[in-house]
Length: 140
Image (tube, rainbow, N blue to C red; front, side, top):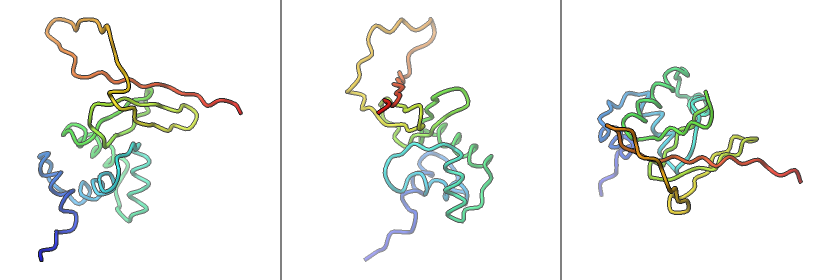
């Protein structure tokens, strides 16, 4: 019986994306990808890294998140100027955003239909449409 190397799936994911598995990348990838799909800010991931005894700077977290996004491992969801979440679910889908709590929740792509998009300007094409439905909580 052959045991799978620790972190093999995360290591394979980084290698498959063409990213060298540095200690920081591997540690942050484990926090992001071992488990269920999730939405995380750079600050949240930085806190998780420090709690997991992974000494990384906030700048390294931002750089790594941007590298993972450029490699297609994450999707950046900008909810407002200066406020981004990184989504481990890179499939086609949309989001609910609860403004008072900052909670982001997936909306499956087949639950929302976008119609009558204008034609893309000459020399461009639509890559994807991202819809963020902003929610406010009722006062009850």
